[in-house]
Image 1: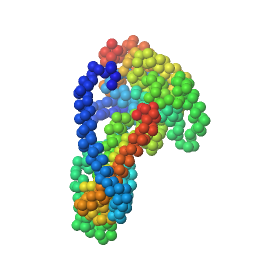
Image 2: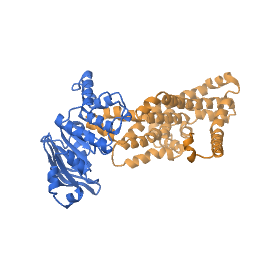
Image 3: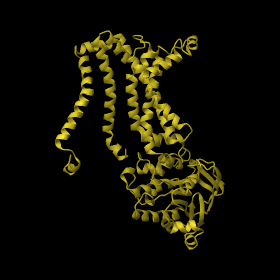
Image 4: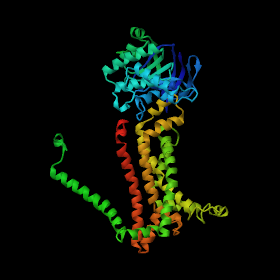
Length: 238
Length: 281
């Protein structure tokens, strides 16, 4: 599903976080929002998810205006940096949550939910972990569970906020390739936020580089590396 | 203490001294006085204790105290959770003002709290004439006692929950939002389970204070024997009449009620300890 960001403006107090940001993301693309802390990349992602509201501008999914839609109704998957797993629920209940909260008429029956949870545990390579609690898992495993949970309702769009930020280098590399594989297999349109340009270039089809509330360059990794648009990008990549 | 910690632990004499100081302090200040209440209460035997408790005025005080607690604890539980939820999970204008307001009952004397209601609802109070005309009794009656108890115990649940919910952050609720959960589901399935132990503790504190409150209730109740005397007031009345045996009997019962709630909490914690550890509390 295409994602269109149109003239988004957002400020915190007197400090402008996003100044008229626009971005066009093709169906099936894997895009990295790259920038230093304070560049507004997480804010932009949260606005796309509906977790924050922009002062002006629009968000469109597949050409449809979702700017005023609540996050519950945007049909997205969201992965948080610190996993945000429900700590009092087992892994299987975490993953089933999005299905359990559906309205009676739309909700799959219990065996169907159970089967879906098993399928997702396979997908994130954690079969047999369903009965554990988040506290009994490693960081990498928790993020896999968070990914499975985000995918349970078959969203067309996956948003990831520094998903590997809290993990060590080895786990990060493993999870990175797992994520790319899942993205391709499920047919998602994904945006992930990172401050690590190597990660962005290794993983993304296109990279949007943010600097102080503006998009400085939006292009393929090769194009960005080959011809940085301005001094800011050159500086950031060095 | 294991040998590994030797480098950072005190010498044996210091340790014994410190333990002695702590034990003496707690013993003199807490255990001994509490024990003396119970020993005084049962000095004349179980029959005398029972007689003092079932004496009509004392019995009325016990029932009134339990009634007041049964009304005010659930109300303040709901209000406390709502306030903590609003303050920690939402941003709105006046948030800091609300936090300060919740602390007001902690910072003003309970006697003043009682006076406030007397000024509003007493016969000479602002609403006195209107209440009289409509035959509604608040001051010197049960509604007034409930009101006074409500205000005095207002902060306990919220104060217990706010730091806890602040430390837990909003991420789990946000995750639930992106997973399509409606607001009430998020509260029931995500927020409430995460705060249940803090909530239980807040409720127990509220209950202990609701049953034990003296100052505010003393002003608003009017001390009508057998009608508006709660247990703490009854203890004072009996004591002032030199009826020590009865005073200590009711006092021990009051202390016992508070201790029971603490025992219940410890039991729950002990029974659910494994589950608590597993879910990361």
